[in-house]
Length: 374
Image (cartoon, rainbow, N blue to C red; front, side, top):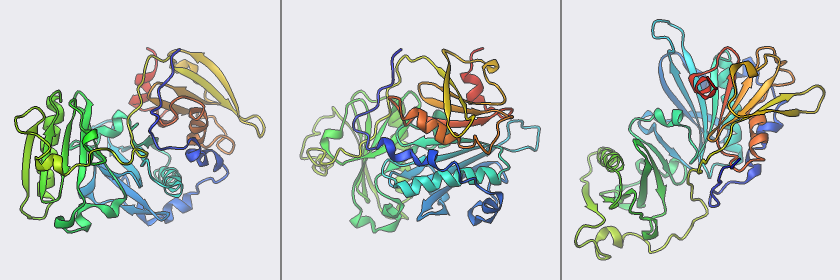
């Protein structure tokens, strides 16, 4: 069996998420969830709601910035929808997203508050953990105009500074097929690749650079993003220039190239999605007969619904996703921290940052059902 490749340049410490497994004694109380002002009107109607963690507090994220996340922050994202359009019942997918440079306090609070919000929603949500560069397809599908990861924290955004003194940002448009992800990278010539598209945002001047082998989807996504940037400049006169890599006259004297550093001066915070190669699914059963957590390997290969037993918790690990299935008969006083179980398991694998999904028996989502063998 072939494992997963973890990018060496990813600036994470394996111990960063261990707190998810150490907080099992801190059962989130319903009273605490109801007293959180940020949860007022959460999940009351179909749509997306996003909060950012600021100094242990949950704050509403500006709707104009939905789809834009800063790698120094952690966020909570709630998608409310109707699985059955003919019913009034609401369903929920609840994610917390961790930026690569988010502090332990921030993402620890995001994890804790995610569980709290699920409690507020009467335990009806499917919970997800998302790490920068390893986002699930479901998470990315929420952002039709593109998903963008920016350097720094929220207070470094364009809307907080004057355009004429704006720090230039180099945005990288890359992906497979229609799934194009946007991420900020150091503004260096060495970052340019012929397979992708880049936008250099200088505030009042914006350049789009199309690599000679870039896909039409990447070019179209960048063009739409460029138009949105112009609209965000609050009526300021913005000059745009779209160029192709192999166009005549694109030499170092061009303002686009002149604005870039020759080399990347800091590669410690680079993020790239892991490469998922052929790997067999693995199913594990978790039990806690006393004070010791016991994990037993059940099978290698695709799992079936009949493999899951109501009085147990199971980990079902796939290339890009780790599911935690919680049976309806589980004693929640002993088995109650799904994120902790998944983290402890993934910490021993080649890719500890894959997406985590917590599902309960009887409330399995489409993603989980699709992952099972027919």
